Image (cartoon, rainbow, N blue to C red; front, side):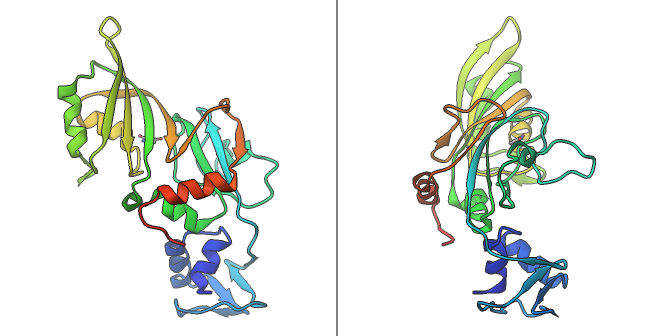
Length: 241
Ligand code: URA
């Protein structure tokens, strides 16, 4: 197996990130620094990343209902609570599939499968991510329409999104809108609404591909079944496996 795939299978990093680690000279094979990206790993070989041996563990997939106030990473140098801290009994080295902001709640996947992560987050695979946003201001078809064609955020146009106006409360100058996107750029939903003049003051992800949060309270997680994982693979337009 190609060494970048081996590293991704071990859940250390995506294949692309693994190539970066190799270029940085951080990967060794049987004690020798790997310089060739096309290196193959055979059974019995010892691969180390940053001096730590890696081995392929069983692939696991979890669904978390992320509460507010928790960061979407594996560890935090400031000691803040992370999403991985919410699954203390998982012994595999899982990490979040993409990110939700500190103040965003809702559906977050965690896994130790780097290829699965790539497949779920790559926009070309068009996996639906559905968000429910409470907005300051009045949402109308007219002011939301640009979202369906794409708006420019951070100098780049977003892919067309779908919206559904759930509630408008003129007395409180508030609206609730559901937004479906395929991408996962930094603060994307907040910036998309900002681009049409509406400020997000509460955000939750309610669906990811074929999954929703039924039965999970904030802070609760459960393991995905094999069937749920293959349904997610099937929802992707192109497959990495
Ligand atoms: N878009 C955002 O702005 N924040 C999130 O947490 C997720 C999507």
